Structures are given as structure tokens and as C-alpha cells.
Length: 122
Image (cartoon, rainbow, N blue to C red):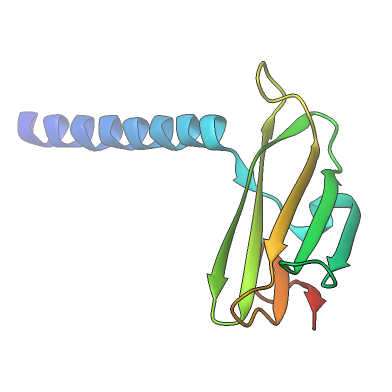
């Protein structure tokens, strides 16, 4: 009986530690924003410049959220831009973002958040 009680206590404690770690990660690094969570999305093609680029500007819809980071990764000819949001706090106070995507190396499409959310294509 005592062994089962100890086992259940360890399981509950482990679950609480995992939940706390997820909450801290979410607070520090934010969560990805979907395309529906953005407003004033502006995609500008600068293909006449050298090097050719596309600029992407936007803002988060929710006024209590701030942009924590903007990253991009490439899969073949697709570039996916990931915007992360979190609660407004010291050091993270703006809900606007701006990024440039280089069109070098055969980039054909740009998506926002998920590969199927295409916002620009050649």
C-alpha cells in the first residue's frame, strides 16, 4: 500500500514539474501566431533590387500580446515565417513585426506560420 502511494506521489509530482516547465517555456519564448491572429499584413516585392527580397510587415490582433520573435526556415523552394507572441512585459512591448526574405536560391513561395498559409509566390 505504501509503495503505491509513493508511486502515485511521484507521478503527480512529475506531472506538475512538466506542466510548470511548459508554462515557463511559453512565458519566455511565446507561442506561434496564425495568419488569423495578425492584422495589417503587408507583403512587398522588391525583386528589382539586388539582392531580390520580399518584405513582410504586420501586427498582432490582440492588444495584450507582443511580438517575441520572428524566424524563418526554408523547405525546398518554400520559406515559412514564424511569428511568436507572448504577453506584453518589459522588453517585449510592441505588437508589430517586420522581416525581409531573400529570394536567392530558387525561393518560389513564402508562407506565414504554416506551409499551407501562402502569402507570396512568384
